[in-house]
Image (cartoon, rainbow, N blue to C red; front, side, top):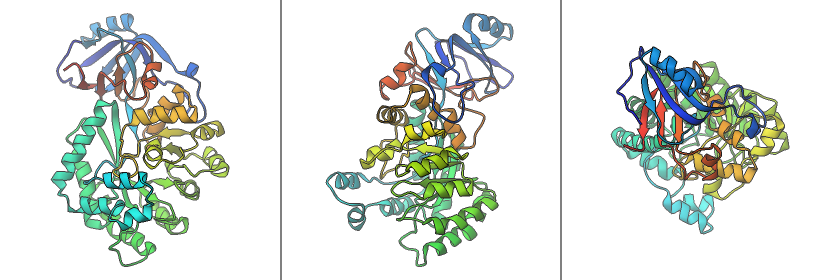
Length: 425
């Protein structure tokens, strides 16, 4: 491959030739997809300027145009399949500590309550994260981001939620903001202060949510730390009755909403729909009623196969959601407790196997449909005007990507028109 230096906005960049370029152009946001529907440009080239795609066309003909505008040329010497940069729309990547003991205890038959009583569970991560310095958390986060970038992820959602008090939640969100400035990756911060009621809080769940609303959220808005809010709607966290007024109040203050919903019991997806959330995530406990309601709404249904693998429980009903007409995104749920793998491509491939999803449905779920879960309309498709974010796999056919279930990795990753990972270097 020929290399060039950083490209200013006035410089054109030309990449190719791709054996196949999967543009995702024209695919619907909702409902099932067939592999035959995937728009593929064979022997393709991409012309880029200012970090955005200008044109996609046959390589030979587009190269003439690229030369006429004195574009920098990045030419592949072997097979190359190009897809939009992957988007992981649900992670808990900012934390300190390990829950390896929890994993061993869970697989040995211990219950959630027994693990918590033994000093494990989410409170263990909260304590480690509270005690860690901002510098430590930022280094840990950047190390993880680098690993994700090498796997083809170019946009990563990152939640707080292991602080569970004003000071520590602000620390986490400031760390995410600082890390965002030090990586090519787009980090999308989400406040998850409504993860659970902290053990050291003396009041009720409603009291805690009121404190978040009146003390924490104004500071987040003042510092511009996040515009997204998440909450865990579950018997072990917050009931629909507790959380709904809180969410509506947060929405009135300008926060976009997403929810942990229907993980162990139903109810959360109904709240997500009622509150106009961007997405409802988990959905392992969603039944026919919840599936139908999600399909008829504008809420993105986000499956988190990493949690199912980590906990040994059923997957979200992805096939049924798609067949009902829902928009299905797929995210890793990377966290130290229930989803420690943190490998989006592997998890998406496994979900596809168990839920009988087409490759088109899986790839849509980790590109443009995942972008919709984050409320982003400038990425996830390789078409003019979109961000030049793409992952390049060293193979001849796109089917190979999911066939290898995460073992085939990108050889190149581009973010905003810059090569941010090159396996050959």
